[in-house]
Image 1: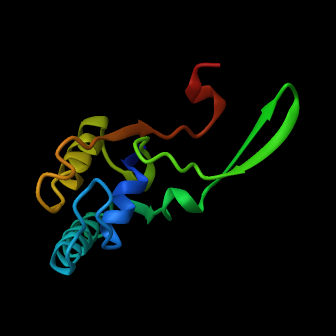
Image 2: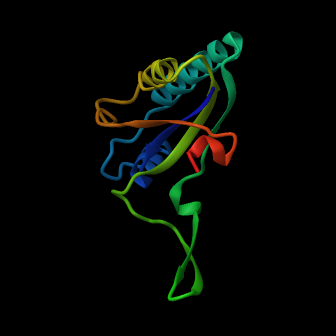
Length: 138
């Protein structure tokens, strides 16, 4: 079964990683190296076990366009610029034996080192991927 692991961050988090102190302490070069090394190690472990299908990081929220409709009229806005609202920051698609195993992988990813306790309250979602509408119970 395939699962998507979704991790979240705010614009403040992206700012901190680029060295800006904007409510979240700025990350040092050493902090960033530790994060990259951790993710590289975990991703390699998942590749070697055959469980990693794909993983990607997403650009900062300021590089987002939101599309919607108001009263049937389409609109496009740049953003979101919400400094406190968390948005999807990265994802992993894993193929593994169970929901429990996908959860174990997400827990491992959540052990990534961060500066101080800046991300002490972070979270991730683990969601099964469906292959057809039959999987949705329609």
